[in-house]
Image (cartoon, rainbow, N blue to C red; front, side):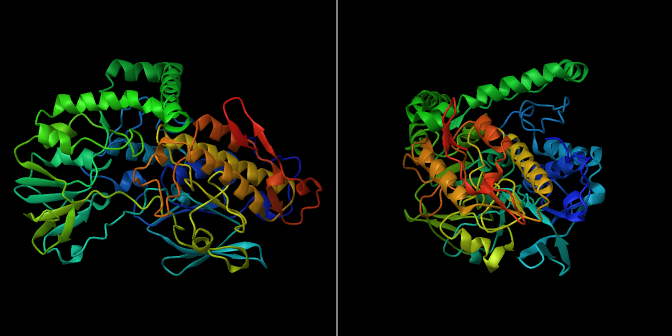
Length: 520
């Protein structure tokens, strides 16, 4: 998107230099700040409640933390990194990459670390947002962009007696590095993406590890390897080579959508590969039966690991799959009557992703809160705008997460959509814009019709679904389709303040693209 034309300067500072509040300093928040600067907009502030930037990749620093999307794709398209050490980057490298981006694009002066946002309230009379910070300070803003991410709030299980446990208790996203695990009896609750990374790392350190498993995941070997010095030199000396590598990764991952969304029967082929991998790694038939999933491959998040199964066959590891009855002062009792004495419990129970609520108290037009708006499940237009909340944009909003590729692609697409909205707002000399409720409803009808036919709706209980069974998390299609939809900004989808144009009366209809029927 080109920056607003310099030939038609606006007399209103809220058009040429809008006060923008960005909440969050992960990929979304930093990407938004960089894009605003590149468009010549410097009147923004990025608020971060933690003392350092990094978002998910700051918080999740547990042993073995790494990305499950290839490094060359899990990065900004405009800022390739030729120096990734591995095909799948470890947490520390991704966090260092984000620090590098903040430095290179000179975002530090616009960052307010250790400053959380408590609430945001829209004032119809002044057409501005009042953003109240955790320290009580009130900030006026023309626009608010939330970039808090879908994996920012740890999910704590509701288990009887959990608060009574007398030992050490912590969540994997709040890892206590000061606590020595050596010689300890450790219980791990959960078998998701975090647990399969940290369990192999701590098994050699602990006296005994008991893995409390509710549902075993489907696991494939991770095609990870070190990237040698010659390859890194080549990427640095010839950037088009790295770009081609990125493009190849992108299209290979896009093929997965065929099984996830269009024909779940395709999943039988990778499911056979996963079963064969399990059989190679676990010879004990009893343990192998415990670790064999009973749901369609892909219904829950597919995991990759080269050492998880191998760690579970060690002598100091046991898998408890009877179900937790209660947590006691000294350990965990299971429904089969067994009690496991523990010194520490680590929660690998993921995040509050599907039960999406506002990241902080948000009050839009007419005093409506975002939580009330989302009482029946989060919905937005392109995961970015919500009717009744003018000049309010979300990155990593509802149904923008992926089961097959890099979420950074989705964030960049959303950021470009926000920039197009700002350009249209300036073109119309409008103080605010607000997506039409009909547009949000039509878009979500189309989206959830597609989700009903996907592998995620084949009957398993997954973290993509709300308690009522609504998938508020995943994008049901190719990422290039999302990119195409966000690149197009149709002003008829929005209401603008002081809008005198007649084109806003008509609503667009559905149109069929080459790959699928998608909303205009």
